[in-house]
Length: 351
Ligand SMILES: NC(=O)c1ccc[n+]([C@@H]2O[C@H](COP(=O)([O-])OP(=O)(O)OC[C@H]3O[C@@H](n4cnc5c(N)ncnc54)[C@H](OP(=O)(O)O)[C@@H]3O)[C@@H](O)[C@H]2O)c1
Picture 1 (cartoon, rainbow, N blue to C red):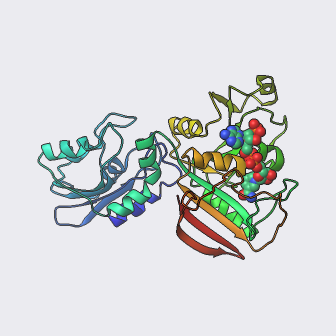
Picture 2 (tube, rainbow, N blue to C red; picture 1 turned 180 degrees about the vertical axis):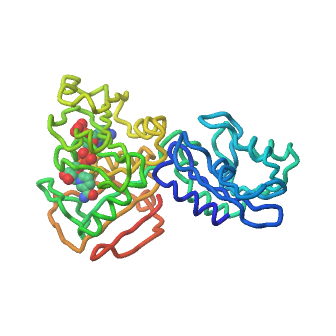
Picture 3 (cartoon, helix red, strand yellow; picture 1 turned 60 degrees about the vertical axis):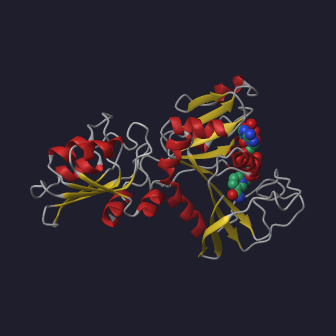
């Protein structure tokens, strides 16, 4: 199963809206005779790949797969049918598929066919690997990770709004590689106006993640790095209750535009989930970051801390808009990773 999980992880960044799945087949004597993984939506599932790659007869054999095999006709035929047709006698599954079209039905069909099914092997690792896919299926909302860079005194920019560059080149390169693992990257209109970012993985992922700008005003510039559709796709989401639609003229035709009914960031997470994004990296400034946390869009935080002091009462702090008055109300985080990236400190935590 560990091998199946490793194979599954090779699909990181390309399988959405599908999960990452790997499969390993042993013959009736326990010899490894095939393996496969799901690479991309629309392409064969892991089990189908493994059956395509068979070196020997699989009848009487065993298959290990980190997610319950599908039993519905999607873009590809059901994997349960293949497992039965190839004469497999034992199926090891890590976790049930949270997709309501499957959710236990795949396991039942295998059992009905007289196949021995074992569930729960490496469950923790499998849940971790596909946590975004599971989150999207359960909540209809994309799994959100908020990333920000700050100085030792907790500032994300100077009083004049400048924030280039707080952290080192090492940290910024790491951010490029992290981006490659996300389906979309979100910023607010102000960050677009102030920083004019590219928001790409610098070619580490092909196609690049979807770049998303959330704006209440639609007052976005006519020239922007995000309007270069040769680099990556961009989606502008605006709040139809406040935006001035005259500004739509400034946005080039190659950029996708979507309206939502209010400025609730949850509507973005839902919209992106509907578009097939399992996970989203929020790289916004303090205002949108605070709103996104309040709305429940963020499940994990990535903080880069540079050994610098930016100072100033009115310099930006990453969560200006939180105004807790009681220690019982503050956000308590669970740090899961702390490391050095060059001279910067990196902290990953769960909310
Ligand atoms: N150090 C870092 O990690 C980091 C990261 C990102 C940004 N920054 C800095 O942060 C500054 C921008 O900060 P910001 O807080 O204004 O960030 P932002 O990322 O631009 O988010 C705020 C903008 O989002 C839009 N928005 C839509 N709905 C919203 C809602 N419910 N709540 C809040 N905003 C909503 C608005 O755009 P419209 O005004 O277009 O309507 C608003 O101005 C820049 O100076 C940038 O350099 C630093």
